[in-house]
Length: 276
Image (cartoon, rainbow, N blue to C red; front, side):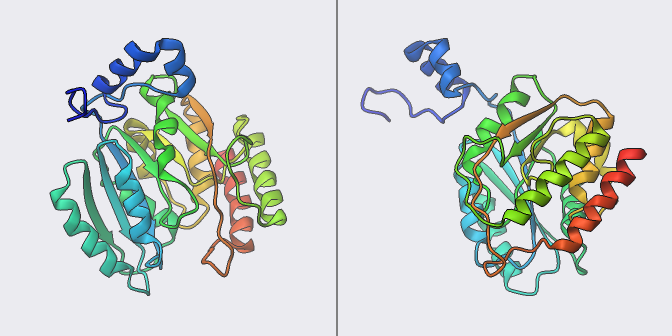
């Protein structure tokens, strides 16, 4: 109980929002990004995992701390470290947490990020689906901001952009930045979108969008990004972009994407930009 006798309210719950609205008013709530998430809402968080034992538990703890009811779907893509042991422990812990149901799935053969995501997409049961990498480059505390356009029925898909400019962004590789901008621009030429960050991890979908596109996905590695972008653009879903912070890793810290993935992305942009 709080000192004034009121029951402690979960942030973004309908009761919490109405209290903020009464206290602050509509204008302040809109300015601060306060809104209500329905009490029956469930967010599906799909996390592909490959050799992430060093960061996996900390990442999942951050996801669990977000005050939204979630199902966390972890897909181990045949890791060679002890990631599977961490996953099994996390799955057991999730059995006693009503706010965070945790399920883990395991590939016997490495398929790549796209393959792991497709496995996870076929398991989701929530209202909205978000992709989360298993490292610490993207911050789960930004989920409420990413969800708002969908909750308010303005968007069907939301991209979290690292390049919109108003969030903290670790300074790293210039050529990676230039490559991302080039791939995004080329993708926009084919999709007729004006995205600033097609390659972002944070992509959020209404469940109906995932049900529509997941069976058609074919790219196993990082070609997933241009493929899924082309598929949602072709179906004319309402797409929003929200700025997100980014704490990128160096290759010494475990970054996996390389120049070969850039060439694969080029092929995928043309292939899926021309035909479904």
